[in-house]
Length: 438
Image (tube, rainbow, N blue to C red):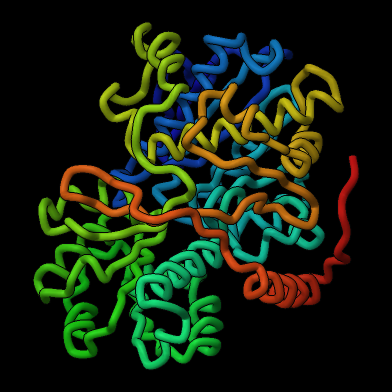
């Protein structure tokens, strides 16, 4: 059962489900998802939402749900607006026989807003690849799970790669690295890491905020033309990314010197610039584009039956695959929790335990059909991120190609930053740090 509702507008229908229909069955696990199929960020939000929805459909059709518990899934369109995200959260948090299993905000701003609500409502937040970088500290941020990577991880991997390209960290001294960023909590996240690395290695940072939604950047790129930084990091989303690449072309800034975060490294970010994006790089959230083993089951159980959300040829694209990974991690967290609490619909509090004890080995990832997509991930109270690895991919004009070996973010740099920021947050919010047990 899959439902879709709008953040403020009237209800709509998705795959036969409607608002106001029969109450959810007692053997259904309710999973909400905050999406944006409308608004300025829809070109990036739609494929991600499709990947999430289709993976839940796959689990229901192929497996009969999670150990016999059917997934009931409902979307609420936020338009990437924080206030609408909070409204969606309040509307959906108590639905289902046991309430929401977890929330996928798909917005750092919304994640910030829900961080204080989640402990009260006892509903975990999965912010895979986004959210507060310090929220990997599970003793303070007990309900936040920035799985697979934070923005400090992303920025650190990019700087490591640039240093390797230059011949070592010592070669960064005197360099100038610009950050073109979405002027929001999301865009500001990497600044602390970049400033730390700049202090360590003697490079200069140039911070260039871009106002939502990012279609007007001429003044920004005029500054880049005048200052001529050695590298430009792009921390954008939606139309801001393709606009930045077009403006780089206009001022003749080499795309080979540009590195995007993983939310600035998908097909909608480069295709509008056509050949102008060739040579542009982005850090990966482990995975890139392509067809994987999971696609065989996806086609057999979902698309061959006419139940897919996307066009089949779109299912190998980066944001769609990222949506599937998000849903898979959520499903496996529920499965982990069922081993402790029983094969039944679980509460958010029980699912939180499952996320915190998630341990996906290479063998299990292969069984799930994600071999070649992900490396093992192990979550704990001390580490709500679970993995901090990535690679660099480069757009060749038609496709994304992996162009580096694996990198691991340097915890000698990041861990003290996490501790300091989490300690400060705990003091401000009067939180007594500690590991939760169920």
